[in-house]
Length: 407
Image 1: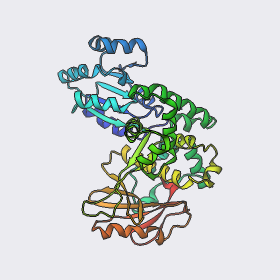
Image 2: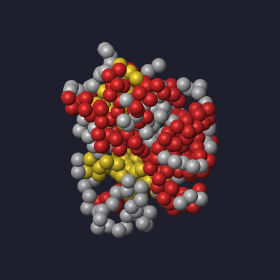
Image 3: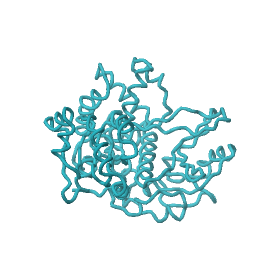
């Protein structure tokens, strides 16, 4: 079963103009399946998971590219960074677009080599887990999310009688394709295998992690702090590692598509604003597993129910904006007196504030902190409260109640 990816139009656009298109992202988000589905005509395919192909690509890149002429898909290219300068030479001679499609799971090494060798010659496309638009095959939900009341009303709602149950089940299972299209697959079985693969293959390839057990504790500690302000010293103390190690390991999680940092909104002239990022897991299924949640009812009533709901919503919106090729920037805001705005979308000179509430009846009280932006002299667009409200309605002349089923 193949579900059409929302990023397809963006990919086709890039392929029309660039000789090389690279699809990056965490393992198991569907990079290879996507490119194989897009493949047509005489485009070849080779994976560097094959040890024989990998050895040739590493030891004799020129021979490898002679054996596998363009147009070509090279899967898991991070295993042979030696190919990058040879790809550069080939596309500099023949500038025809769409020659090479690349995939890679380890963005840290990939980005380093792309910066050095392929700048200006490659389009970078980040693929993440399924969006709700993809799962529901919804054309309206695939469009760029807007906080305009009329635009929200045009988006389809998730066809469910119990939004609370639906959303928390989605949080538990996450958005990786394997978990989304196989409802009978146990989250514990899938994520146990995923973590072992991630630790043994990717982490060791990225850096020297001497103690896998300690790294796993670090991974769980990060998951437990989902939707919280990042406190590296607190994590270091909790795990018994140095702050420098926290920096190193956190960069691994970010660059390999496991963690996302939501940057704070602040101005140089205002010292009242918190300036540390908030931390989120890009897949809530992995986050739930690491935190020991395996049943949606237990999670929905548990201590992390609000944090994981916020995590799911933030990442869902992030995917929507990325897949639509938007240049909008995401921020959160918190002052030292603890006034907070969960999400600020900055676009075209305006700030669009959003609150996330596990409530069925958001009110003006839920948007009281939006005035903080006005006090900073900023231009504010329409905002709202994403919640379990059953319908869209105006909270005031600028803000709306936005059902989570509209995402």
